[in-house]
Image 1 (cartoon, rainbow over the protein chains, first blue to last red):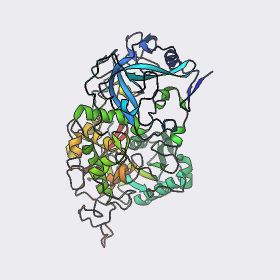
Image 2: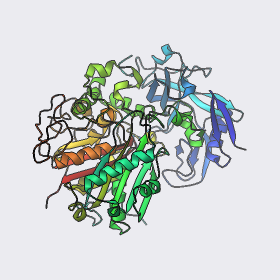
Image 3: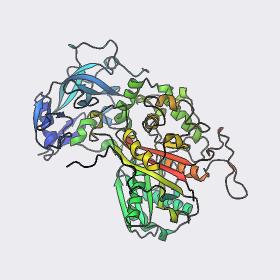
Image 4: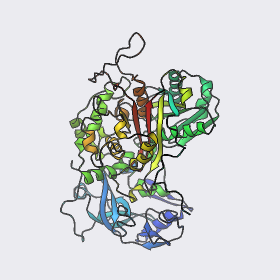
Amino acid sequence: MAIVGEYMGMALTIDDQDKENREFFNWCAKGEFRLQKGKKSGLLRYPPTTACPWTTDRDYDWVEVEGKGTVHSYVEVHHPIQPAFRDKVPYMILLVDLDTQKGEPSEHEAIRVAGNLVTPDGEFAEPETIKSVGIGTRVRMVFKQVTEGFSLPHWTIDQDAEQPISPWRYPQE
Amino acid sequence: MTLSSVTEFDADSPKFLRGKYAICGIGETTYRRGSEESTRNLATWAIKNAMDDAGIGSSDIDGMLSYSGNDSVHAPWVAGDLGIRLNFYMDVHGGGSSTEALIGIAIGVIEAGMCKTVAIYRAMNGYSQVRIGGTGARSAVPIVGDQIHNRAYGWQSAGQMFAPTFLRHMYDFGTTPEQVAAVKVAHSKHASNNPKAYYKNRVTVEDVVNSRIICKPLHLLDCCVETDNATCIIVTRIDRARDCKNPPAVIQSVVGRCCKPRIDMHYQHGPISTVAGHYAKNILWPNAGLGPEDVDVTGSYDAFTFTTMLQLEDYGFCKKGEGGDYVSSGAIELGGKRPNNTSGGHLCEGYTHGMNMVIENTRQLRGEVDDSCPIGPDGKRQHTHDYSEGGCRQVKNVEVTANLGWAMPGTGSAMVMAKDVR
């Protein structure tokens, strides 16, 4: 049976045949951020793929990875497109460089993981919190359940990390 | 075994067809909101106009290509309507960057002997049916599998998907909102001299940066217009094109949907402030046998002000990181060194997924841009080259144009055209 979850009024579906996404989100539901690690290359990849982009190797293991990183860039939406997000604006989507494998296998590569900026409890961040986050902010991953066996990864400010004095933000507030 | 590297591009290969194919006909509908017509009707209207422009009939066209995101009409219906018997057709999935890519496909199928003359069209009710900005039908599509990694986060529309590249460019190079707003200012000036343009009013940098934020760094006026229209380009071999009514726009080089690495999720491979033009330029310029300094007019895709700036930079019209300076220097305005999107483009004329920029450059090469200049006794427009509001938009002595098509930061297409030299 396909996994179908209702999330913020949106129907999210993972088909039976989509083993890669099913496993990825299954691990998230267990509170673990796991990525595919190519057997030949030993390199992690995101989002799930069906082969290793560096070796074409189709064999991999799901390996737990620390959900910590630095904001590489972001999206701050003020005009919602999807009805589900109408009462959430402004909201942020963060593109986060994981600490793990940053700058590998080449200088400009990193595992860049998307997610909304949320509170430690998984609620959408308030406008004041949004204004404190930009390129350079240190964040940690939290999970939000969609349905049984299916959670989404999100990002929250890492309170234990050393933060930049002023992360880079778009100049117009 | 190692295949010859695709990164070491060999421009001397005999497969290049510089100067052997041309655009012989161009056609448009009006640019409107609320067409109250089917995409089928819009398509036949634009193709008919392109046939009239070329001075050819139904029996002269035997190939058809179209592209869409399930928001258009398939070629067999349109061909039937116009009495065209097809030797080849294909309806391709895709949006921006398809224009130049399909022109390349047309050249390929003609070269393969599959047909002789190809009409390429894009028909869309981008305002009144499937809104191109992403509201309505496009955001109601079920979210399945791979799409969960973006759409579930409210990361879906074009502006939302491209924003990390735009912001990172500002971070990496100090590009300012005011610099990029100059793209809209330039295109609005051009549109004020285009009777067909949907938005004909000139705007200032202040107008742009004071308009409301849609999704940082995009203000409302950094975003293109949503319109209902169809457009058509007819491609054929140069000798046939020379028999047509108007002078051919001769294709020198074409790049189709050239991609950055990891195109499944291109942000994995940085620098993310670099776009596909970085790779495409290595095909475009060697094949054309010239470089950016030889180009008189550009058509850099303006879904957003930022897309124009990023592409001009990565195709080498200025140094990497200096795109903000280049677009705000006056160079891209009519009367400047190298005007961009002289019709007003997607920001002002109408949204066509790239077609109207190729159509405009074809007109520039012909020296017959359809502005408000008076038509002389010979039936030709008497261009004044006075670019003040409501005036001329014909650039003087255009010999080479470049189109830079955009699908997203990771994918782009491009084409160089030149005036016919016999």
